[in-house]
Length: 340
Image (cartoon, rainbow, N blue to C red; front, side, top):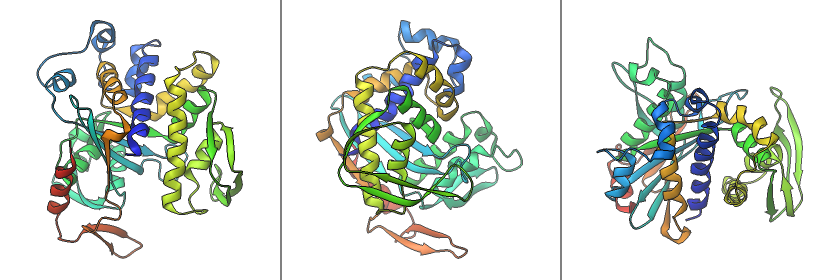
């Protein structure tokens, strides 16, 4: 249930980005949402497509909608396109029931990247493989502007046995830029955090970061440090810290996004660091749909410690998670039983 508000935030980030971009130009919008057409921008006023297969029709018909959320490091990181966070939000529109599936990044899966068949790799590498745009290796469909996310979505769909209707990818710079644009976030830190070896922006260097316990306002850089610090505490604690920051951003976004110099400054990083296969009208529809979710109606499914998975070492420092039965059939049946 804890991911409900965090996912509202992610959808809100994209919707805010797309709607704000509409004030710039169609070209700027298409940087974030490459599938956008001039008619899509006009549809923000006239209303979305209601035809068969459209997002509006799926919502009206109460069809389940599955959204994939991806977070990656972005430019300047050692592995800029590895998706450290992969979440699937499954929503039943009429009842507002939802399930969030947290996917381990080290799942060993089939990635349908190559023209001559799938390749095996860690789940978090699918987006990166698509981002390489290798014409000698990738299928033509993954070489489109939305190719990286499309490939990641296809890989997730095959793994969990459920279709993915849309995806959103956000990098670190866009995340920090948004926080700065809204004037920082107020976070109540439950206990002090000290990390003497936090990776700095300079290659192979570290810095010492420290956070006292208590309520405080964090700018984008400090919020990112607090959420990402890895070696100072456990992965479970890191997850809780990320939630605190995400909930704080959501609280700020609910009050509206201030229009001013800070938003203009953030426009570049957000435009460069957010990608989606959604169009502005569909993003707007999903924002309203997710905003209607209540936290008690959101079920959380985490596969990280699932008894259906087991760790395996493939050599050359390849530690992965694989299904105990040898296939993902049991995992898929388990997920299907948890969906709204």
